Image (cartoon, rainbow, N blue to C red; front, top):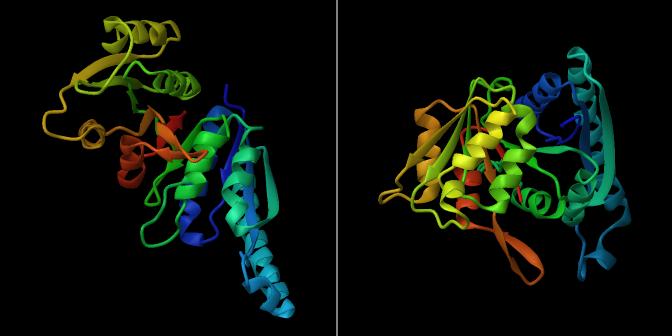
Length: 277
């Protein structure tokens, strides 16, 4: 069940459409939503701190907190308009520690909602990576160009027989059971493990049907395309409202680095992506 949602609030007002999408998820699932805004201390590591004027630091902190509180006020007003159970949360943190702090907060919620990075604006890559690999919870990444509320006409679940894909589908069940149509998408040249029936989606389709999910299995060859392009092209062709997929990565010096397909989806997505690791 998804009854407790955490939302990372963007400061810039044009991104409030992402907030509104998150509120529509809470409304659909009758869930409580906590909006988190960070008041950030600048990173003054190295030789900068001793020479940085104390008065200037105080002013920077005050301005950052003012902006965060304004963001929370907009969230609070929007949640109340929707008659949602909600809670604003202000966190004071060094800007470099925000991703890890947020991922720790997300451990106490059923779902984390964040915005995709905007190439011309906000960079949320570190935030998304920390949440995916550090929270132990699913996350829903919303395109920065998102318009409109949650729709559940057609959902596409990417299936390759892996544990990450299985976890994502299981975590997304509260949305899948409400969807009008669900596709189990298999890209034929993906590397897979497990029995052939699992790879072909037969057993997973049976499992979803037992949850009364209306599911169709769609197998498509990658041809000369990379997996990212196949998934996004299929989602566009079938007018998908949401993509569900496992989030993949590999460890490097005790940090997780996004895998190629995961990174490609997050950078090129045009519909929300529900992801679990």
